[in-house]
Image (cartoon, rainbow over all chains, first blue to last red; front, top):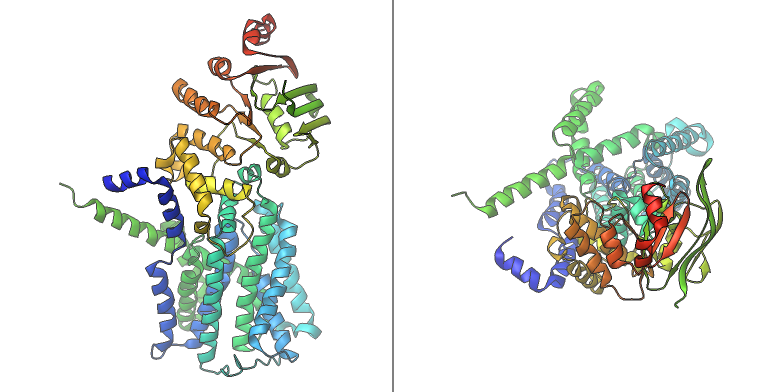
Length: 343
Length: 247
């Protein structure tokens, strides 16, 4: 900090405080660049737009887990439950005549969010390994239920006969994924903006406070347990939106949507990208899904070998994931630059 | 004679077979600067844990601000104005002091429910947080990560967090623990400046601090309150000497 800066801070400490929180809330240039680039992907020649819409959907899904894991510090091994419930709710609606996608999406979010609230109430007093067990257990129960209820869900074959009307009654879902891409992009972006606001709000700060020191939050009078179930509800609704997006853009819903494998994948994606940064899920999804697509085309059998290797490398060398490491590097470069060359 | 703001009536506590308090009657008057002293293991910290609700007494009642709060949760007691600090720093390591104080202020004002308003929009509270930090000489560290602060500053932040809740009663568990004598005096001097209506109950081992800043002193030993009197009388009491030095 320069001397003049220090002097102005001492003169007006209040301004400095307001500026600090304003700068936290402000959109950074790189954020705008990120979303512009993601949208711009659409115009690349030969790009697989179906694949890109899957990247966006997984990014949204991983971001939903970030609310729990990154911001509140709650690990979940059963996050695919909410994704799957969102997917099946959207699928049932499409199958039984409610084909309008946007209202279907909202309804799927609502159901997944309600389930998240119940789940949150169940686990709000549980911590650590116990939490992993409860979320994993719930995942297995719901997965088994969907797989066995063949009458209702089609079992292994998935849900058949889903019809989704054109978005805004105009943009038909086509095989090139043109509508799928824009629909997924716009929904993910809108939900991202809302989540960003939520996490920059006093509620978001309280989540981080409880992550850092729940006992101290209690002695400040904070409703720590209630906030756990609220965080679960929000994360579940977002995951449900991701599931509904996948069903609506592909007109299918399969039990694998809520398999334990998917819960593990989304955790891997978030950790690759970096938890607690809001963008970690999207960065992780870009790396994971594109790599999965590339490697599985080369050798479908060994795909998880490569992902395992990648995970080991990232956790050994980048510790907190890609995004935080890039951030650190950037900060270091910038501070070196501003310090100027020695001598 | 002002009224009692915090009282325990016949409070009994035991961990398993180990009796901590047989039956303790204690009262803290509004605006008092009240010290609890006593040898290690006398139950001083347990007393604070009971009063704040982290522990439940086996029997007896706790009254705060004219209300029986024995069955209230710790949060309800905090909301009612009964606030504590910890003997060992219990802070938000990855947050900076400004964010930490904002947590307390937002909680006090009940503004932490899910919303789409950013923290930046809470301008009066941000100003209040900065003013509080400024008063305790922490304004210059407002934006440094708490974990990187010197120990003495973390102790101060611990006190600031409690004060931010505008407590009626402030319970300080060894606020000067680990501080140099001079830093200890600085902390207490700041506390002495607080408005008179805030009652302060503090546990302290440094007798210089106790006798300089307390209006009244309670001596705990072996599960009971041996004495409650002015600092002068406590200093002169042969009973206290006996408790500390052994009979």
